[in-house]
Length: 115
Image 1 (tube, rainbow, N blue to C red):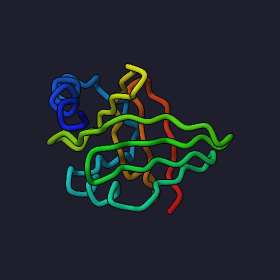
Image 2 (tube, helix red, strand yellow):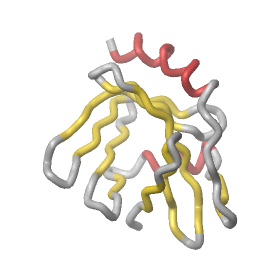
Image 3 (cartoon, one colour):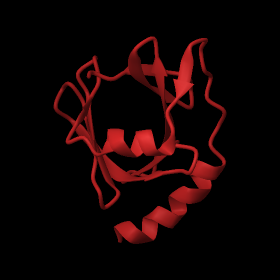
Image 4 (cartoon, helix red, strand yellow):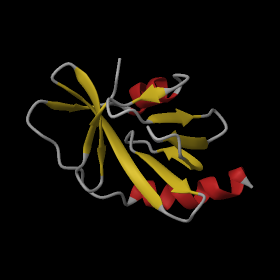
């Protein structure tokens, strides 16, 4: 089933919204994003954790312990699009900003990642 959903993500990645970048933001390449997602866990400063599995599975665990699951795809431009099991979808871009890696959502929210 997971492999059937991945083609549905591709159009979302291709038509992802423009991400609002700040002065000093350096967009991570697809290769850099792939290396980032190969980490066991991507941890954010607010306490949430993302897991990107090699088979395309995605999970996010909130600081409260609740979690959300779905599937992800990394576009050729390095944008990650996630289709959650509840039908919600979202695309994110990662940038290097003033010495930190930051995830930017389509709505412009910025989430720094712990090293």
